[in-house]
Every structure is written in C-alpha cells, then in structure tokens.
Length: 599
Image (cartoon, rainbow, N blue to C red; front, top):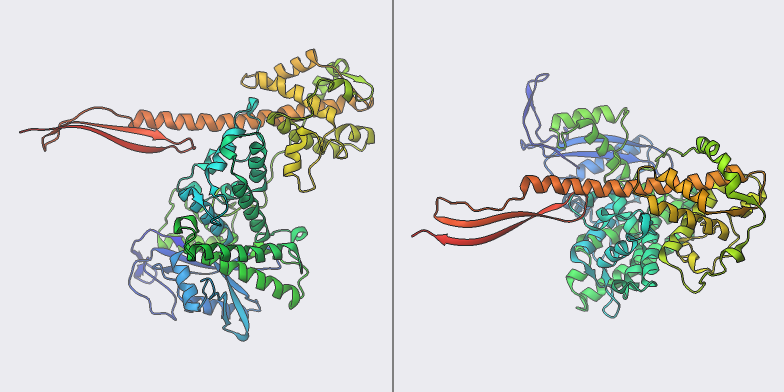
C-alpha cells in the first residue's frame, strides 16, 4: 500500500468527486476519503519481469474479494498463481486472518485453497527484507536479545564496538569498510533501507567481530553469540533471497536445510519465552515471529513443489518477495518530486503512466535492493606514461627475495592494519591477474595459499568462502610501504604526487618479469593509491557532511536565555543540544529551570 494525502477533487469529465475510496464496481464503496493506494502486481518465478495489474484508492483495508478476483483473472489469462506476498502491515495481517493463514507456534497454516482449483494451494509470504529489518530494529531498540537462558546475550553494542575498533587505523583503513555510523545509530528514515540491514547482518561483520575479539578488544569479550547470530541471519537471508541461476536452490540443496534449521531455531526460542526462561523484551515481536514462521514454511513447501512437481531445475527465492513493488513505489516517489504523499488522482495518474512505460530508474535507497549497479572503472593508461621513467629506478630485475625483506618480521602476531593491507593486496592481485596472461607476472601477484597460515592472512581466512585471493607476500610487503606513504600524506591536496615521490625515493625492490615490469608495477601502485584515495574521500566527505549539519543546526536552534511569561514564571532556561553521529544528528531538548513565581 502507498500512503496518500487525503482530499476531495472534482472530476470534470463525469462531474463527480475523485479522491474517495474506490474498490471497483463489484464492491460497495464508502464515501470515505482514500488514504492509501492499493497496488496489486504479478511477478513471474521463471521470467525477468513483473507487471502492476490493478490499483485501488482505499481507506486502509485490504479486502479478500479483491485478492481472490485478481487470482481468478490472472489464471484466466494463463498465469499460474502459487502465492501472495505482502509486508507486515496490520491490514495485511488482517488479510491473512481472513484467509485462515496463521503463524502461531503449534498452529501454523501457511496457505489457503486456490479459488480456481481446490486441489492447489496459494502460499502466503511476508516480505523477507521487511522481516529482517524488523529483526534488526528489535535488537537495535531493545539492545539485548536472549535466544537461550544459558547462552550469552546478543548485544547491539557488539556491532558498535567492532565499528569503533575498526575506525582508528591510519588512513581510515577498514576491515569492515561498508559499515558506517548510519548502520548503527538508526532513526526512522534510514531504518527503511535494506542495504543497511544486510551489511550489519553480514559475513563481513561476523568476521570483524571475531577479528577484533581475537585482538583483545575488551567490549567484545563475550561476543561469540552475537557473531554466530550474525552469521546465521546472513546465511538465512541469502537462502531466502536467491536471485541468480548459479546460486538457485536445487533439490536437497543446503539452503533448504538452512531454512528448516531456522524454523526449529525460531520455535525453540519462542518455547523459552513461553516457559518463562526469557522475557518478552528478549524475543522478537509476535508479528515478526509469526510472519517469519509462515514465510519459512511457505518458502520450503513452494520450493519443494516447484522442484518435484513442476520440473523446475532450480528456484530463485528472491522472486518470492516484493522488491519489484517497492521499486515501483520508488519510481512513483521520483515522478512525484517533492510530493511524498500525492493525492489520490495524482497517484492513479502516475500509476497509469509507470505501469506501461518508465524512463525512471529505481531510487538508490529504499525498501529494496538494486541488482544492476554499474560503477565506472578506473583507467591508469595516463599514469603509466608518467611512471615509465621512474620505474626503471624503482624496480630492478631479479627474483623475489622474501627472506631478506622479512628477516625481522614477527610471525606470531599481526597488527589489525597489516591484516587489512593483506586483504587489500589480495584484491589488487586478483584484479590485475585478470589483465595479464604472463605466468611469471601472475605468479608474482598471487600465491597458491602458501601464506595462508601467516598472521597477516587472518582477515582473508575469516572472510573467505573459497574465492578470496592470497597475494604474493612480496606484493603485500611493497603495498605496506605504499600504505605508509599514503597514510603520511592522506590529508593533503596532492597526496598522490607526494606518495609517489616518496615511494620512488625510499624503496627499491626486485621484480621477476623484465618485459612487463613497468606496466604492471605502474598498475599496482596506481590502482592501490586511487582505491585508497577514493575510500578516504568517501569517509572524509561523510565526516564533513555530519559536521556541517551539526553546525547548521547548532547555529539555528541552540539557545540559552531567560524569559518572562504572562503567568508570572521567570528565569526558565531552554537549551537545545545535538546528539548522534549519523548524517542526520537528532536534537535533544533540555530544560533547566530556576523558577520564581510572582506574588
């Protein structure tokens, strides 16, 4: 449903009012002002398309007659309807109840009889991204959840402490680079963004928690349960959000096991609540728990039905959520401009246009994730010409000499920054290995897991699912020197030139391939420095944006003084203070009173 602005308008074509509830000719309409736009959309499980099929101006209620009629008409048009998906709004939960769908533990019913064929089922789904955002919001609001009475608690603070430990490295090098303060200090608008939820409940965050716990960050001492919870939710979200053929769910696949285990996990957790072993605040909301329970059962049963009875080779569970509808609503918001809540006639007009043709792109942020995200590639052709003269002095021919380079290296431990540079070196080696067919160059960039047991490889080992690359140890050593030069000059205007000059002046190392040494070393240095400059710029821009907003709000609102009131109360001081480190700091009102009443 899309929230509308109430209003009554004259339709000059038929001399009647528009903006009132209109549910079609088959249903008696009231004269209430419409406050929601009800949109029905068909999404194919096998093809890459979705299509809005109906829109109604409603007064907040979703009637079962509309949904049943839509299913019947789609079936008559040779579409096969196997399920309905909606978010967790109270009107949609009421729709479930009218269909007999129930998510109560021990009394689960996740389908209703198909209106066109009594031998078939229509499965009910709650939108998976919405469910996981609700789980994230519950932990954020309550700060602590307890799955079992004898286990360690799951704490939101563990994510914050991981972020804090990850934000102190020179040059803003990060092991969990995607997580920002906006991920952890939530307010109403950013709570809607799926991306912020998935990047907190990610393998990268779970690895980061373990990574810094091993480095004796005291606040993460008892964070094992939070780490396991994060990894569990990451795997569950992936299983329920498969989008590509290569990762599609197949018969007897592991994703089905993950979802079945999640059902048991949820039921066991609620049993602890029912037995009084944990409090209600340490559990999910009942609406979220019941929605997740129904969706898990529906996903499992529909997937098995499609694989065994319908001859599907694989199933993409990502097509069982309402991302296409959220994208459609996002395009309506774009088309409406600053009008976040259009009137009924405006909404219906935009619907008719966008349901047939659209030149608009889905919004960058919102209740859905965008699959096609093309980023410009960095070209280093110009840089190679600049480097060519200096490279002869920088790079000498010969074999890598690891023993000489690391003769004073401590192999028992590694600083967090070293692990991050090792991880980045693997990225550079993987990227550049694809640009050359020279076996000697590839060998100089990558290792065949020969250094997997090094302390510096710990972060790669934690994050890797089998696809991450371990760099040649000499490449890692050289990029460590490059990082030192970058960190020294990272806040200066000409950081690139200063870092390059320092690298050429201070460091000399051997490189095996005489033929490609100039081009490859140029690419190594330029790719690494440009990557770090872009990352540093992004982080600094965020800090500047936050500072500017705080300064602006402080100038506008911060006030301290006294005033006389007509009621005889004098000496009251009102001060507004800004709190929070997100891009949108919030305001806290502090009233300090020294009250004197006139006689």
